[in-house]
Image 1: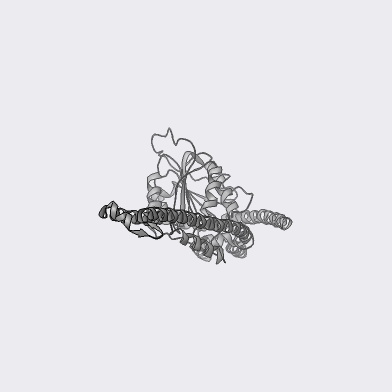
Image 2: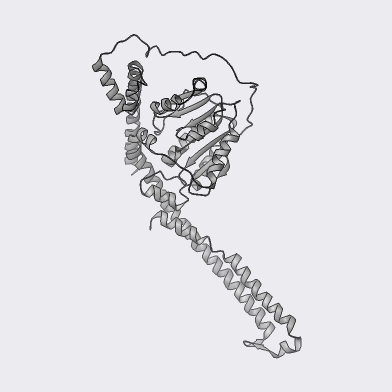
Length: 393
């Protein structure tokens, strides 16, 4: 039996509450007994036989035996569910290992492309609460951050954050988002490109520590195995101010529907029941967790959120150019075509971006060099992990 089927079966058993139902049954029997006792006088009761003895005595003994039998049945039922839980926990360990391996072998090589193609839609009663919390927590006195800014509503709700950091693996995605903004607001937004999420690597090294009041991880942990979730959550904790808040979505595999997503090679295996202890060990406080198929949590970093900032800064934004990018190097058409081809192949931009002339050849060449260097480091790390997994096996 697949884990999704086991979890669905275990959830179905929760509708049966022997303790509650048995109390209703005993209550009904006691009411019937009281009704008879009140209507029949003592002399008559002594004459009416019930089983082998007098009515009242036999009724009391039968009721006691019934309560004992129901209690024993309830204990056996709870023990049966406990055994199911043990089997589920054993299978979870198998799924965790499978999730880690599939991420390294299948997900990681195509992570940038997948991040652009995979979308997330939440359509239950908890969706409104998610966006309401973003609105309530966004504050111009603190910087804010959105990792994987696919959802325009999140960007709109966090518009008051000053500044607002948009973090993604694809620079073209960030350029598209900023291209839709007016010139004034565009200068309050800070784009930041990160590499793919790979083990034992820092992703946010150039971002300020202990500064962000609110960070939103949208559709990111949904596609990472548990060990990578822990790594990302650890690094994000360093970015948050004391008392800061982290909101994130994830594929809650305590739900059979989400386990089926993983079994069908869509999303990763991240049960909330395993994430919560990990999160608490990192020092976060879990302030809210959904119990529906659309999993998300609200975490709070220990401490008090405070600032001495009394007003928003006003000033002129001066663009500091990159010496490497703005060198007076000239490119032939053949060199430009080769740079464009490499940039598209590496997922830095699309053919549409090239046609719209979003990137100058110098900037694009620099991004290609950085991406190649990053991929070499990633390849080395992945090879090391593969060798370690082989030893473990």
